[in-house]
Image (cartoon, rainbow, N blue to C red; front, top):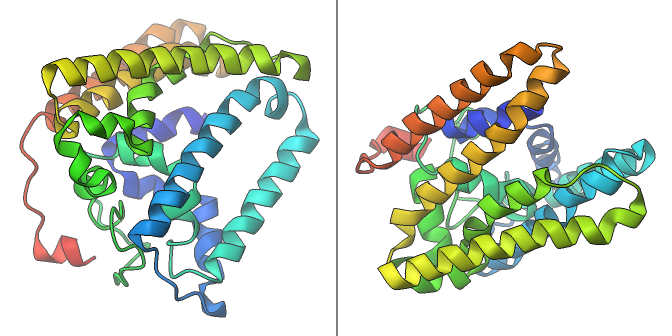
Length: 281
């Protein structure tokens, strides 16, 4: 029940999930051990790419590994939890894991780029500038632009790691839902299907961006809306079935798609100026 609600919560505000995420809690839990290093733009580029690679590898692996082997899933959860704790002891606040290598971070950036409401950020009551650029906790509306840098103004943004992720993600979602859970021997077929759809999505997006000369600011909200809309097209019936409410599949689907439509309308409006208080929190 909770997993399908996370993308919707990111549309409303990424702060909601980022302040209750168990890994975020672990990441900050060891800061008292001396974690004071900030995340520089150079390190952020490397760790951000690593997080995208982790996402690309781990999500399809649900089909042939994590959904079918509880022991492997448990070991993976423990390993990632240990990584969050270790990085929290080295880097300041959320700089080591949440704002760096977390495989969910690129999705948070994409879906959280124009939040519907501002809940503030109680997880970071005082900003320490632990992340020097692209911090989604400080300014979700600026995170993608700062991550892409100057490339965001031309078609070159689709060739950056985050730009490629954003362009490929709608196809990635479709690819995942066109596969089925199976044995480990199905891994090759799963990755081929998911990556094939993702590549097709990237090629189409890159062509449209190049021909139309579209900046990242114009196209990333569309990519986000398309990806999350496709996600709920597939996930809503599964959620209804999990609740033994098969008749609710279409109402759930329409409810989530309405939220996506409202979000896209919000994303089409000019970015409001953030107050000094909200920028400091």
